[in-house]
Length: 522
Image (cartoon, rainbow, N blue to C red; front, side, top):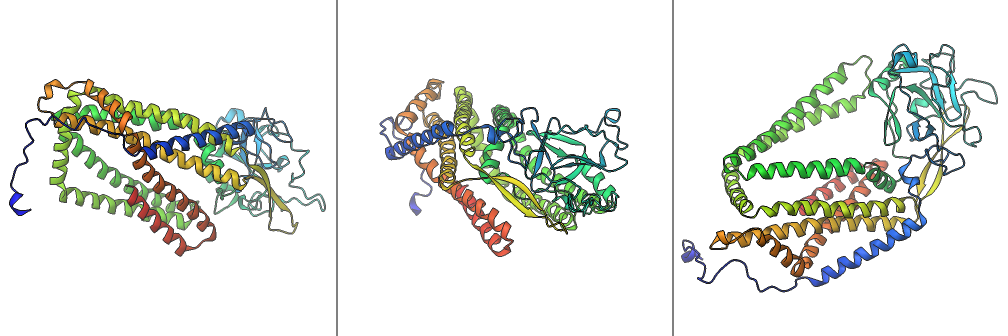
């Protein structure tokens, strides 16, 4: 190679861009993708025929009823919200989420909580001196439930929520059991996805009044993995489509538009790099300051492990900022070379402005597929059976706490994994098609002698060539990425199980595997 190192490549006189003599590539992968879509449609039709979307979109109470529907033993149509009672996600259906922020309406002294009023599996229970009206929280009638539990022991008449008649004794009582019982305090809440969550201020105030060193935090119970995934995706579809797609596409267009101006190119690229470093520095500062605030609280609400973890996270973010800054300095010449490539790309975009339509079509394709995917997935997740879980409550009574979760057979589990794989493959396929069109358009522009002869028609011809000859190549490349992403999803599932077993070695091994496949994917 030595004697050719300084030779300049010269194109032949008749060279006029990439070849026009094309043939179909990787046809087998195109056929496999069509078969995958057909099988996915079959799964979707079966799920829609046999499932009920209400089971997934609406929350499940401790008794197996679906809030806001008539699915179950009790008609909950008038009670669309789930108010959590314990950390197992066991809760009751209520008409509205409790709002104590309005003093004149609620009548409580601090507008955050009334720790003498409890929501229980069997209705409202109040200690003498309660500030809220008994009907302040309008919850469904659970008097016919076989799993209801009240604060008064039916055998000996003892109060199991306020053992000695004081608020201070309630936190460790059998009824509340540090957030793992059948009763919890009424506090100021906010609605989110038809569920009522206590505000941070209310949780902190409750901890102060009942002298608790922890707060109610949810354990991994209640909905199964697939319900968590598909139900949240569907319920938050407006946020996913609006912010994830709409906002993302809008910001991308603004960024692309700025890159079209050579005078702004350097400023935009270097500004983005400096902004990234600045974000890491700011996030590290915020995290460490938050850890100091938590540590200075009296009484301390957050556990020492959480405070230490926040402080370490802040230091890690600062280290990452330093690494990015160091790489920015070392790779400054390569960054300038990349800016030169972007400058050529901006010239191509100015010559062929119709390329801007490609990401729009990609986004529309993803939205169309995601709509069908979510409809299939939600109905599939509803095919699970409601299972009953009983957990013993520490104490003299020997009582058991009941809550519900969804259980799936192997067929539904396998179909869910298959739908997830179809999503990975199709999403990457849509991205690959767009990349192929843009790459082909820019290549034709760059290698054409007389660029004045080019216009928007070149993009249309590249779209035609891509769909006619190269969909198989796009399917093949996206299949490889989808397989890697699928493996990463399986590893994430295994990691979730390992955390339940509390095995640090196994968790470290899975983290390494996740990191390796992430590198391979990117």
